[in-house]
Each structure stands twice: as C-alpha cells, then as structure tokens.
Length: 458
Ligand code: BG6
Image 1 (cartoon, rainbow, N blue to C red):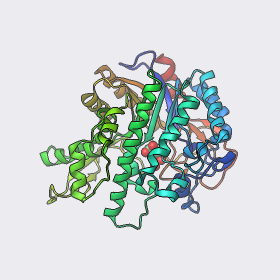
Image 2 (image 1 turned 135 degrees about the vertical axis):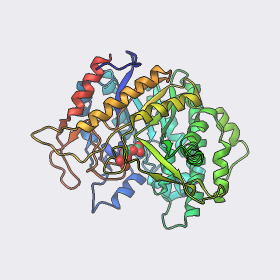
Image 3 (image 1 turned 45 degrees about the horizontal axis):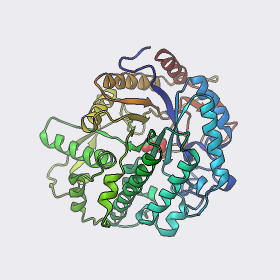
Image 4 (image 1 turned 60 degrees about the horizontal axis):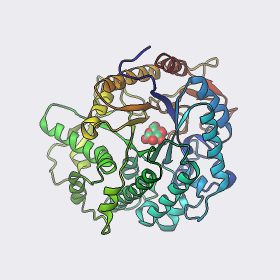
C-alpha cells in the first residue's frame, strides 16, 4: 500500500517509554520514580512498574523484532532515576548509563534511528521528597544537570531529542507530579502551574545548551496535542473549543517555538487566582532557548460544547464540557477514531509554526486482546494505522513537514492509566496483570500490516 505525500527517506518507527516497558525497577542502582510510586498504589488491582514486559532484560530480542518490522526509528525514553537514582547526586549511575549505551549501540547497528525522550512521567521520587519536585525551582538545576549528562554521554549519537513528554497531561493529572490530591483544587492548580512554568524554564535552558553544542541536532518537547472540535457550529462552542485547544496544547508549543507565554494562557490562570513565582531574567531564558522540532502525541479528537450560563470569568475547564459524537467509534476507554482530525490537527500546527519539523511521537489504538493460536487479529488497529497514515500523508502533501511516524506502541506496555489489559502494541506480550508467564512476544496482525507499509513506502 503506497500513500500520497510520504517521501522515501521518511523515518517509520514506533514508540515506548521506560517505566512502561522496562521493569527492572531497582536493578543496577535504579532509584524509584513518581511513576513507580503511583503504580504501587494500585499493585493490588493491576500490574505495576516492577517488571512490566521486562524490556530491561529482553531489549536485544525486542530490537531484533524492530529490525524484522523494518523500523527506521525507535522513540523511547531514558529513565531519569536509572541515571540519577535520587535525582540530586553529583555523579550519574554508570550502570544505568551503560544500559542505554548498549541499547543505542544496538539500534544503530541495526540502522534504527534513536529518538530519545529525556523524561516521560518518571521524575526521581527523591526530588519530590526533597523539595516537591517540579513545584520547586530547584528542580530546574537537577533537570539541566541530567540533560547535560545525557549530552555528554550520548550527544554524538543522538540526532533527535524530546525533552519532556506531555507536560500538559502532568499539569492536569498532577498526581503524576507528586502533588497531593488531598489539597483543595485551587492549591493543586497553583502548584501544578508553577511546576509547568519551571518545566518551561528548564527546557529552554536545555534547548539552548543542546543547540550550541550540537548545531545539527533537533530538540523539542513531546506535546499532548488534543485537536479540539466544537460540538456544533454555534460560535460559542467554536470559541470554547479554540480556547481549550490554545490553552492546553498550543500554549505548550508556543513557549517551545516562540519563547513566549501566550496572553490567553496567562488570562486563564488569572481567573483561577494563580500567582506564578517568576524571576527577573526568566523572559530572556525563554526567548533564548527555543526548540527546533516538535514531538506530537496524537490519539483522537476531543469534541466540546460550551457550558450553558457559564461566564467568561470562569476558568476554561468550567466553561466547556466534553461530549461524545454518536457517529464515531470509541475505544472502551472513550478515545475516538477520527483520522481526518489528525490531518486537520497537523495542518493547524503548520498554520502556527510553518515548516517546523514534526515527529509524530505517539499515535495509537487500544484494545483488550487475547492470543488465539499464537495470533492476535487486531483489525481495528490496522484500520487505525492505515487511516491515520493516509491522513498524515495528505497533510504532508498539503505542506506539513512530518519527518517521522512512531505509533504507540511498538510492543504491549503497561498502560499509563489502566494496567496491562489496555493494549496498544504491534507486538503482543503474553502476560496479564497478575501472571508473568513467559513474557513471550508474538507478532500481531498489525505488525505484518505495518511491515508492509514500511516496505512499500521506502
Ligand atoms: C500518552 C502517554 O499520554 O498516552 C503514554 O505519553 C500513554 O505514556 C499513552 O501510555 C496512552 O495512555 P494510557 O493511559 O492509555 O496508557
């Protein structure tokens, strides 16, 4: 199957993250992360991060599957607490670094381009205990130290860095930042938006360092891009859809690309009475440290309608509510199938940022799945991939500069929100929430489909 708009040198890949795929949660000096701690709270009811699908030991086997699939890129994350177990050590954990040297070397030997995320939901828990994690400005130095260490170790091998995964998700689901959920809502948001601000500064510093040291390297954030559509053609629904999308997704991209916090974002925080602690030269830090690539995580569209009788002085989350479109198919977890929304979203990114290179760093369909005689017939995932690739190609034909597509996920992983039952992989792992079994890997039907896509479009 050939698609319009996708050039030959395109980086066809797939995606995972450390805490979801590795396991080995305290091996060779690894410290605990907030992702570990959160998952342990649910150990009774679903799989936690201790073993997951054991990528920490089975990485070589997994890379041979990637090779078989024909992958040209692999988007994965480095576990921050494998490198700095508590986050505040002066020297990194050599064994932790060695694991990633082995992984990266093996990828390169197989001509698979590593696309590396620095921080995917797994800040060292030590930093949260010490000073509240990202809520404190101190975390900026610890993140910059970690990024510098990654540049020292891997800078010559990595052409594509993604700094922070889905910062907007961290702010909304701020338990992932270690913020106590017992606090009143306003206090939670006060802390979460301060953390958001500190993450912006930290990344700006890291972008600057990277671009000075490695001028040919691309670096940027991995954005949770929720393309937001109005439930009706009423202008108020359209307005609130735009308000939400700008606030949630485009503010993140604007800061990374333009180095400025949009006024609309600040207006919304004012409505909540949130007061961000800033310092004199912060504006300059943001201006001087800009991303030169965007990672876009895209799953589905969100359809919103304005809340009746809400006032413009209410915070955005109070002025709109999500609704379902009965004509669209939804996963069991409420994520819709709306591939044209993907093309539309990519076009919007181009409208904002011109020909900035885009890595689609996630895009995927989840299902509960069973192995039947060694096979998984994941037909809806095949349809999802086909239709989204087709729409991405059309967007590229319209001029959008996508350079790489990395569906979520290469292999079944521990879902961030829902344990092992919610599967995304092209490769099935024979384990469930409570039985580890042999962790044997099986190629799903989508694996064979995607393999042909890569072959036919090269
Ligand atoms: C993205 C995350 O938000 O969505 C992934 O970057 C996550 O880590 C994915 O797995 C899907 O979410 P969930 O909760 O279904 O695993």
